[in-house]
Image (cartoon, rainbow, N blue to C red; front, side):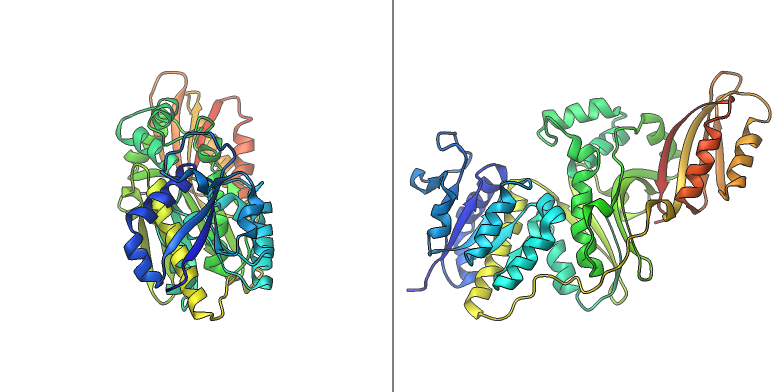
Length: 428
């Protein structure tokens, strides 16, 4: 008899239930891949009486974590509860007990991944996290394994399905932000409190993980420039279309010759760019390697079954390693690159402002831009003979600090009612 691989599952919410369903659905295939049966021996839950989305025998459920740690037949702990605590404590104790770790927890990895991975390496246990970024898309293993012979210079992607759904609705249906968000919540794509998604933090957690792996240098989420999508208005969507762009919330990491730029923000990208066609709740990650060139990974970035697919893929790899007993490297952060300060980041910008319609206003604004080294690529004026009128500018590449200095001066002009929006522009 081949010894089964025992799994202890933490959490039986959407993701945990998905793990149970995919394991049941593909049990024969998984057993063939592993060379042994894979079985869930215990499931940790907070409320034993709560109805469950997955069909799990009641005797497998427990609210006592010690039972999982003490069970010698449980070799793998799968963490699917999310958040930093108590997940960090649970995984720290599991590592100390010699359990192999699989997690889908991007916030935990972005905030405490360094400490947990170091502890796992010292203990000699595996720590895998494919499902933490982009759900069912195998981007982590691609960066760590398939692209390991490349020097990756850029990762850029749509890694949050909620914001991508909202922006798609605003672009294709003409919705405003509030209406599109309400629709996303009604469909279950957005939480009742959507702040982590729409304010960009979910994407920032994922970018910190991706950039650390891609560039081989540890990136903390606090290093990431983060802006959300709450301030976007239908007018910006319209002007983007007129200029040949689409607006997406992008996570962008760039290796700039020994320094790293990491940022999450709404971005105008050319309508011809592959990422511009990624709509709804789908995710995509664009990678540039010096040997392989440009690649794009596309698929469902969230949901119970896609995420469970990645989790169980990690379980299969863990089990294979247990069978081979070979060495396993977790961390590939060999370097310690400095992160470029926000004020030194360089890109193009779209700006929309409302001004008084009178002679000399455009020249005064252009003069302020020029005084701060901001070169203008194009200008559009909407309206005439009314107050206010709209001016839309697109700049050439400029340093963030110089643009902000120019805007502070412009916002003080009496002929300027308001700077309504500032959106970064990517060349493609």
